Image (cartoon, rainbow, N blue to C red; front, side, top):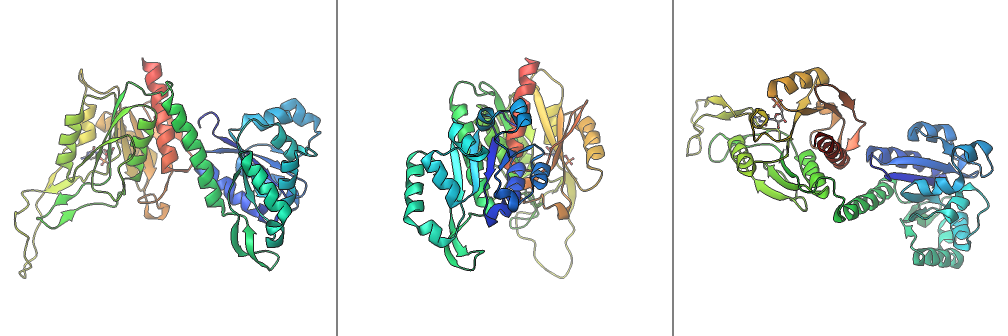
Length: 409
Ligand code: C5P
């Protein structure tokens, strides 16, 4: 996890507090650490134990707790995170924020912080529409507080209207965008960790022609490979993405070569070499049809036979020893059983430096899905990563690559 990718989540007392559990899970999935402050009223709706379990951290509740002060004072608590988020934010806590009151740990942290603050209001429609609340919101907004929601809908009190807390996914997306932007701003400074390095990433499936209109393919969406290319570019690497056919837009800041077949993909990689880093994330078809006909195969009562030949192994070729071998070659191993054991065998067979292994059994939803649960394997270690969004896997991998190359140089 990157330094600063931490949220201090303040949970005040509204019925929507139960949604904070879902919000924490969503943030962890995006590789964002969460530490909670639970107000007295908030603790009527969710327990400190469930928050501590999901955040894997201590939950802070008291302003005057000697243990807390020994471990982490309220000033430090409010500044240690990259962002403060109040969700749910009740009318009461919003009014206190506007007035600058500091009569409990939550409001004290909000007053003491030097970090940006997001609030996700949650209250009855009449309270939301009240002039006092509206005035408070506009003052807070002028001070730079970002407001997420609320949304219109049925309320727990039986009424209908504006005041429902935004869905956890909406809040998590806003938080992730904040950190992405902060990360990109860091990238614009001179401390890009991969500046001066060149990377090649393969992504997506390949299409192997059967005839001019039909092809052999697989379910790869290309999301993981594209996310890795984007993350490497954001760290300052000159990045070439060699992509098989996907539905995805070209990632920003990346030079993209679009290819169809495995042979085209190999040629495009060879044209892009030399490089410092190569990540082969494409699901390259193992076989192609030998000599596909120029004309469409006709249905004429007899079943056609497909004469298959093996495709070149791009990863193995690039991994071959030699003077111009990239400093770091990374392969992927999509497995449906004995994920780690198969990946270790693949590491040795292909001669690459790391293998990123994942379980792509249909029930995991990895193929085409937004999340990935990977193990990063090299000749010495096996690192089990938690389930993360594919974007977060890309960023974490880019950071690991930067640390490795730094140590190697
Ligand atoms: O052998 P397998 O297809 O399971 O290996 C997966 C790894 O090898 C991935 O990194 C994939 O991109 C790469 N590969 C390749 N060329 C092939 C087959 C796989 O680069 N023809």
